[in-house]
Image (cartoon, rainbow, N blue to C red):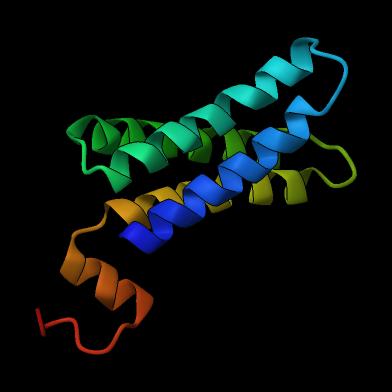
Length: 117
């Protein structure tokens, strides 16, 4: 769990640092920054084992999957499928893997035997 939470923190921090380096803080900046800050908050909460991180993680993953499906099905730009995959589906899957119980996470990630705890 810690490895995936640190991966989530690292990715969020990298995206946040590139977004902050932009000079224009207009509407699209704020629309992009909110999911990144949520990812960072979930990663911090999971590293410190806070219950609110689990609730926030499930809610955020559901919203990310819904927004990714909306963009994938109804928004028809040239590379919108890649944006939906990278910006919404991948973080949602990473968050959900973080939230899985230990046995299920080991079975999902293929870390040897799922029954050995």
